Length: 157
Image 1 (cartoon, rainbow, N blue to C red):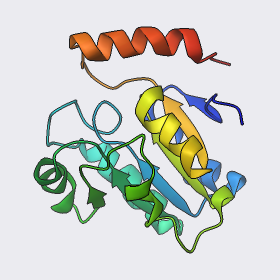
Image 2 (cartoon, helix red, strand yellow; image 1 turned 30 degrees about the vertical axis):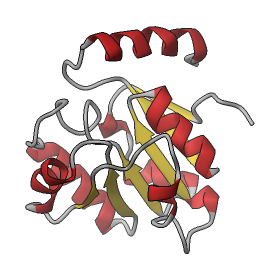
Image 3 (tube, rainbow, N blue to C red; image 1 turned 180 degrees about the vertical axis):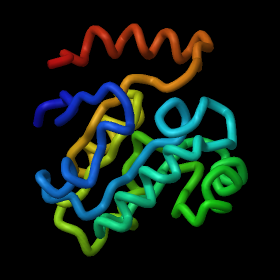
Image 4 (cartoon, rainbow, N blue to C red; image 1 turned 45 degrees about the horizontal axis):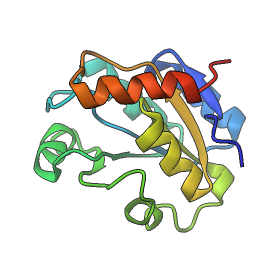
């Protein structure tokens, strides 16, 4: 099992209905902090709401799986009728595992900005992963340390 992400993307908007159709994806799991929204924020940009709506209209189920506090994640996405779950405990796979039942593993893609949470969780679930460049600023000591380790482990294509 390779620990490398299956896809490297510059930003979340690179995930289009055409891309998902070409890859046979029926369920897209998105990280929240530094992927869809600014870290620790609860506001999603209108263009990202439109992106999610466009993907859903193309027949792909979209959900947010975040390690953020449940209340903040539900506030950020619930008012836009976006299926979202906080406190996912990534990279541990058991909280997201229940959401992928009914899908073949190759039909599921998890996209996020961090190797040690998002990509590793996808690998443990046996699903495909997409690593995106971080959105906004999220630079505490721990995040900076992890991003430094990511550069050693992840070989960008």
